[in-house]
Image (cartoon, rainbow, N blue to C red; front, side, top):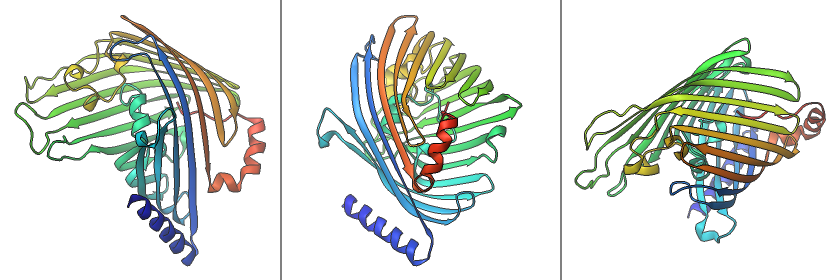
Length: 365
């Protein structure tokens, strides 16, 4: 039924677009990940992930890419490579987008690639990024000039209430404002886990609020060399209304250095303070959305990456990640390949190839 609906929707979109002489817009996003993790504990066991993700979209655009209306639909197909189709996860994508003078308002099931910047790992873990590629709700952002910063807000309704399923959603506000090469901003996230309709005795409502002010410095040394530094605080407030109804408030310091030179990248993340996610032992990842490494008093993550192939369409890279806490160490090896193309890139592919010879692609930090 879902496949028939997608086919009918695609045919209807193309028919409406051609019938009204509007532009058909499309995109194809492909990811393949090999992730071998060693040196973990019961929360981070030694394991290997190997999967691909294919996310095609098609729609109609009224106006242009800066000002206008767009309706797009598609799917996100996540397929583990060491299993059959029964283990695949197919998520529908269907959203309306309105753009006007730097504003972009999206409603529906929206790819997270529409965000200006992704949430840091202490707010949204890698595992959730793999398994939940879409925002289910609303995404609004404002960015007229990247050199001046941005503001964005989204509501992600992660789980709808049912007889034995708990309601869950989170709201994230992020922003950044530049003064020369220096910027200030951060993230504020509210995360909510409510009762199921037929809630058993003892099941209650849970609240999670994270405040993360940041101060940073960006230095574009040359077209092929960049340095980004940021530091700030994390305040994580959690309470279980069905238990003691007391706010637990761990906090700490977070810092990040990210450098890129030609095809090489290096990134250092550090957290020091009280263990975050105080209700993890009770609710796990159903309620706590961040990486479990941040349950440590001290956490250091060092990433070294080399881009084997880097063009306007393809980024094939290999990386090593070193994790250190006050209790354990971990070592991850990763190979990642992403291919992205849309109607605009395909139309100007020859020009994009020429530009690639003179400068490297900018990364999302």
